[in-house]
Image (cartoon, rainbow, N blue to C red):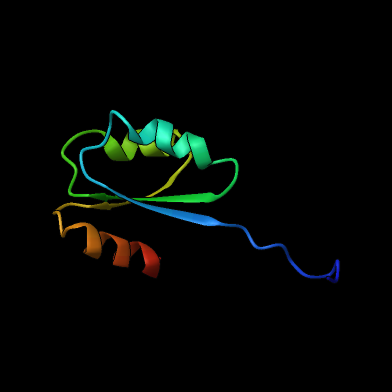
Length: 77
């Protein structure tokens, strides 16, 4: 393999609703190994803030569209 090829970095996409209690540890567990994207799907707690503080890129939805829609949104970003 040529040393001129750019290394690809892995991305992790997480759809989450009202997951403030667990999202921080989840993001931190993979943040050093991958780019982490969290879609906060209509959360009414501090999910987005906790995910950002843990190192994730966060997309916030004001209304829940369900996990499939949240993942589709994240894939387009």
